[in-house]
Length: 490
Image (cartoon, rainbow, N blue to C red):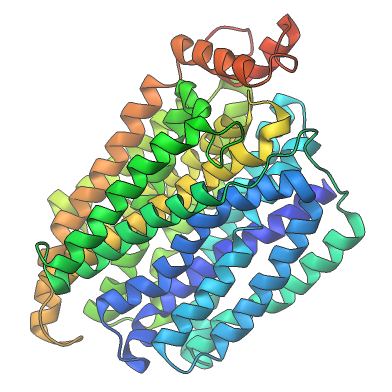
């Protein structure tokens, strides 16, 4: 339990940083004279680097030691936070956010790998992951309030200071209490695969964010889109040829694992877009202070906090299907309220939408993580956890990029003007339809990849990856425990 608490501190660091930053965006926009695209880069520069390096960090931790990589990540993240608080311009802030991201890439997937190797019994692991997911809710609840208070009283630079004492405390506790662990068969580095991953994510994100300003048919945007497509093709052709690839494509033969990846992208794309939209709306259109905007978002954060451990318990006792169905329905209903009924115009309806989204997002996190690491050989826990974490960051990156691009294309005029407010509300309608579609995808994919057929593909995949580890009847029960009810029924 102490190891779990220490690992959760790293998740608190990363999650708190994201939620606090969202509340500070309007203030940063004014002080740094940033455009919507500039605000997108303060978020996406971080998530983009994080997504690009997570799998490398996971495999490196399995090879040279999980505690060693975890401690290095804490040092880099804490240093990056200090540099962000001193940034003199938007460009330097974006650069220092990337330093943060390098450290952050060594935290969550490595911490999840440590948890997976500490909690080996499937139901206990599911409950541990539920507690892990509750930390996201704590960060969502505390982040907007703490961030709003700091921004209104001290300034936006202070939002990065809070990471420093948490990072130092986590480092000392890790050094003292977390045991070192490695994979029995370490994986070799894959520099070509790493460059191709950076090419796909970097080029695609740049093309989406800059498209509203440069134009969809501009040579620059078409060039970056071409680089993204070519990098993806190269990745799909190159990785299967390697004995130890950066991305183990055989994982995706498991329907639950593939479904968890898609669900993670959709759920976190919805979250990234949801926070980006509401933060700008509440402060720039409604004219609320950063603290009051944080209080408005609190119902969503509170439901996420309450539902995350409940979801973990449901996954441990009944499997992932019920939490995924609840998540999909709730997130879709929330999007429909804003897209169809203009929920932002009525405070009561807006809060209803916030509650539904918090319920859905709180339910979705534990099934994603548990599906990614359960049923896979523990020797590859770091890689499997890194793929799940990468999917989350890809989703959040794309959510902010796409929603921001929609807003940038639809908003005209200076911040605070009547034309800006009118343009924002108009531009937000297609943005909310995108969030609704993400919720519907969570529902459909969750239903399709949590049945008996999916359970069979998960077992076959685990057996191919490590026949010795997943060979007997007992191993099959462990590999498929999360797909069955208390009585063994699917």
